[in-house]
Length: 425
Image (cartoon, rainbow, N blue to C red; front, top):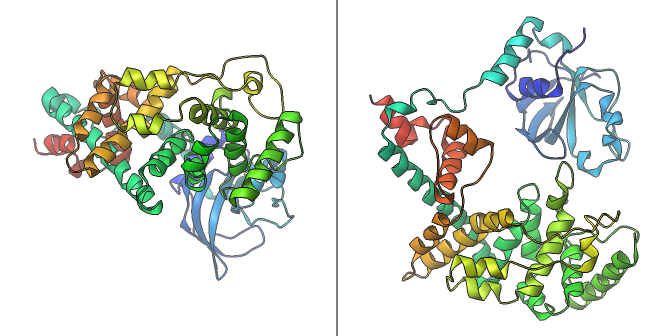
């Protein structure tokens, strides 16, 4: 019997374990127990990460890939992709092929075809399409605008305070060097969001004082960023790429540099969001604004900060989105939308952290920055608007994002002041 739905529905069934898991075995007859089905991955790479399984007597940790038909594994060239070497289970509706890693080792496979109630498939699909945005969507009108506004403001502060914990770890790991900690926060934000953790590692491994030492040479700064990011290991694609390779080889030997261990992801992105473009922007950033960190920590006017972020990339990146293919000439300068992203995900929270740590600082001034930044435009903010809650600026949109991701998704209604007011009526 065929599966007349898309892979998203099969992922939904796996995520919520909506199948008969009794006496579950692999295609080779080994007993398997699903301890943790993993976390759904909406970016490139395997469908689920951080899964935990028991196959036979052994416990396995890793990723899970979902396909309607097992033959899609090879059709999608997963057997040649390093990102899929961590897959520990291949889940299919129909097991009509084998799955192997890059080194040729086979991956355990389970078939769900006879374990899903066919009459329930339509119901499952309706659940996906008709899930409410939030549990209280139809009762929000019972809460006053004042109470909602008060809680949203609190959520904005809580979101920034959560980021402060991260920055505290940065500051500790670099021995109290504020410049290095801020540098890591900025580099992390350029990962947006697919490569956030990889860029955070890049910011930790690449010393800010080294960037400062070579800031006058944009080519050398590019070599440091691309080389430490591990993107200069292929055969030379053109003279510029080969030049960067040679420059990084010299600098890495001179300063005992090592590339990051995280894998930079490049799939399912708009051209301007490709990591190569973001790294080129980072290099140009610290080349054109070498004193940026020192100036921003003294709380200048937001318009002054934006002026420091107005610059062009090197000539090579005017005609490239990556090293492999030349493209039509186009400016790759940082957009106003990305400048707002930097304010929200690095500048404002770090300034808040810096001012709070000073003891006699003014963290509330950092919050005032958010009042001058437009609200974000994304599906979550649109859904809040459809539910009757509109926001005017980034302070409110940040609060709504934190409320949704931290409370609503996890159904923490009893810890939410809005939920408490609804439930107490």
